[in-house]
Length: 329
Image (cartoon, rainbow, N blue to C red; front, side, top):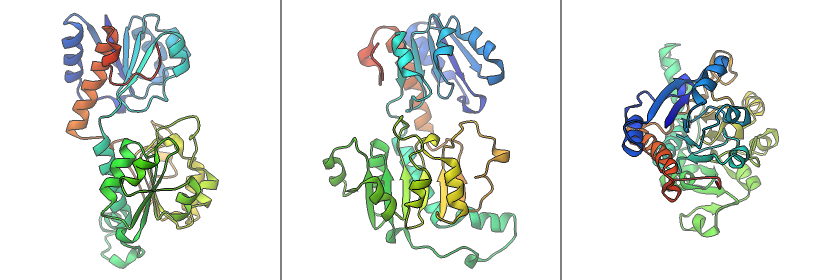
């Protein structure tokens, strides 16, 4: 039995000891575990290693029909991420390949990052740091005056576990919390003191907008030119969901036209962006982190353990013990 751990070099875990330990504890000491850094220019190398794999553990490698064609033994794709849009779910289901993202491991961490972004952007931390480090200026009035957080309305798009956690953390920091999510019951908003609104109402009323949506076919480019035009209060905009939820060209245009006060993101449209030439890089009012909102000692340990336990349970026929199986196989 073989498990292939494979991802883009900058997305690989810094250490694989816990993953290997978990796999061998569950599948036996003789299980083969191969760690391979994905290289788009050498897909044949990836296919060669995948050919005899029973399981693939990845976060950002695309798993489509072509990849599955080169994996005749593949039984399960385990994702050390909560999203699974990188896998062709229909094709995997047709071939009987299980797809197992990690249902929850970083709710606290990502919502904590949302609050950090709110503070950092509203208090001009990047601008002041560059003023001091690069321009050697000591002038608090160089930045525009903005309201305190307690005088601002926070709008949350996507009211799942992370969105709820962010709302709870922000409840004592901002004037009002509103949210939209068509898949959540009314009671889940009201019991947290959050006002349920439509997309249009949220865009018009929010001083700060945080995206916590997972990516679906329905919400790709959810934040497009029309959405930015509808942001009446020139908000801070923070994307902690998926990069593909945002039309980046429209976002850049909105920033250039001063329709947004500032932008923060832990994700971009491309998971391996060309930072040297990216139009969002280098701006005083933009803070970008490298998909690291989840990053903590506890989250990493949970992520590695849960994603490998998913493989163990699936390969042992214990589907009821898989943390999250998103297709019927």
